[in-house]
Length: 210
Image 1: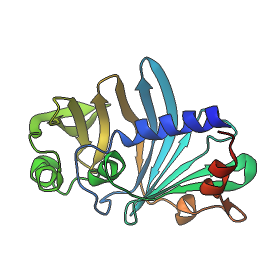
Image 2: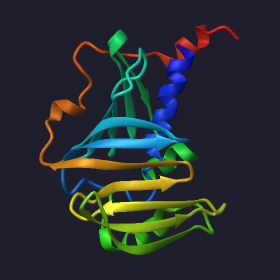
Image 3: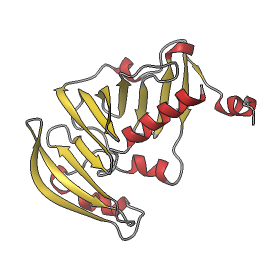
């Protein structure tokens, strides 16, 4: 169980690495797409669904503890479904890197996202720069370069129509959206399935041998 949970955590960390450029707001355009992320040469395909205030990611890499991920932008709560046990794990926002993942997501102004980044960034000494217009899989986008206070450089491309990162690169991690389909997403896509029970993570950790 420990190794499968670690693999799920690694996938989530990579998924949330794309939350690096723009602030959390309601989505201007709902859509679904194929998402392909790369981590140290390994590719991780998934399906992503984005609604008015929620997102769901279904990784193709299945495992006993590797199910769909549902993110609520308003509450910043993330749920990981565990189909093999009909249960789900819930994490709430905190401080540090976990909080920063939710700090930047949808662009208020795709053409000028840096002012919002500067307003919310906690790291002094970092910078945000608009590189210019570009295209990702044939769709118009705007490229931004983000440099953290410790010198880490990230590049993010924001799709002009869906106002959502369509490509990102951060060190050895990268990814992009493909086959974007604009349109309303069903509400049940973002709901915890009927019959699923919430995992008692505290109790589980307490029962693990030291």
